[in-house]
Length: 147
Image (cartoon, rainbow, N blue to C red):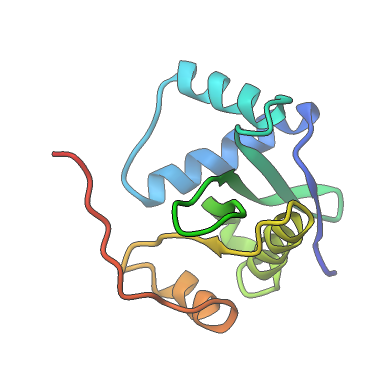
């Protein structure tokens, strides 16, 4: 069955937390309860400058998630969209869940007048990169952060 993609709801909190925890574990990190609670509240909040979330649902079960936000860009008049997190349960990988979530972000970005959508992944994330290579364009940029 094809996944349905919809905005995150308050009732999704347990499923969202389970999937986001698995996503964070994949990248070798974790967060405390305050970060979970704050992030979930921001995802459901009204601040247009804050995070947004979509979930993928199959047979009534949340099987994936994505977090994204819009921000200004010094080289463009319109805002751009940063797709921060994308996760599909391992049991549904390869069934179109990841693609559907990315296309949901593309649609949200188009509706907001922010046609540029970008994201980061680690070079070892071969499974996801096979999808990303079909749905996006890899750039030559490297990420640096404060040490």
